Image (cartoon, rainbow, N blue to C red; front, side, top):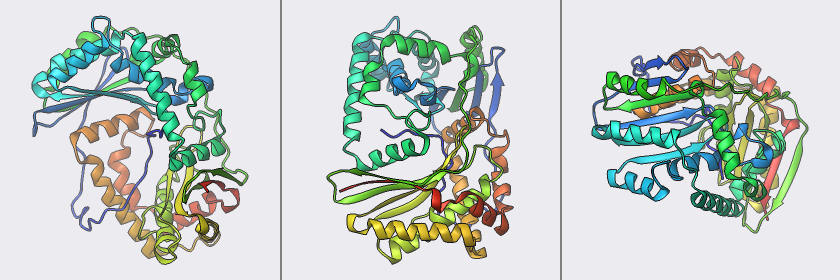
Length: 436
């Protein structure tokens, strides 16, 4: 069961003239109530649709290890477990009759409840969302159904070699008890009780930890008046933030094999990387793109996949979090080719970290590709306002998105070479192989 982590991951797009003219994202109207509740609005009247997302600053990283999976179960039950005045079946029927879409999911640091509807339904639908949020029933029968479904998903995950490899890699990198290394297990899900869900909900669903985004066909004035009616009266209870200790950059190398009855080998390899908000973020983004960020033009893609035919897929990616992020290479190869594929990948890592032989042509292509990708962050008003909300809740600079193109353009060859020597550590690789 893969987590949708909030990551900054870029892929190549062939749009040679994307930045022929300056691009700026649509303006977002931001409002904060006296109790800390935030509202982000972005009007777009092209279609009679509205989407609202309620972000809550809580997720899997806030759970106790022994109750791993609690955040997922809680968010799922919140939108499916009924309200004080409606049974779970009545909630399902209410949504179906009006073609209103309501979902919820928990990430590592943020949970989000999404509701979409026709613009003419907005007030009725938004009032329903408030009822779901503030008057949960926590129905016992639906709770048991949710637990059983989650347990079955975990069992199926054990049959997915890619999921097994990704989960084991995080555990090797961070440790099984670390907020970014732990995963739900059959035992941890089996320990969860409704009382645990209620306590978790009451602890973290506080106004100052909430941010509501609304995008689409609506009147900002009407939405603000509606929000003031119910959200301004919410009471705040102090929350003790978890203390996540920052991890050192270096680590010892280790290789782990997990045997599965499969015909291919699924490999995850890498090490710890950037801290969140690191000044090295932009040159590191360029570096990882050059190394493996694109399946055809990157060094790993050309050599390991195209020229040598050693892999069905090979690419690098990276993420950040409050403790320390990672740099990771994912590889899918024939079982008889895994040894030579790993050897050649390590040669690339040694070369780029020790020689830093990055060319001006590689730099130019990576920067252009990442800039071309940037414009698709804003392909709909729904994406724009949600991305801005996530960035703000995770502590990014307020002007991060608007300044991104200029910062990327300023990256120099020397900066990329410096981060290659600083962060790529061939002798500190964690390698997880799931295969025969």
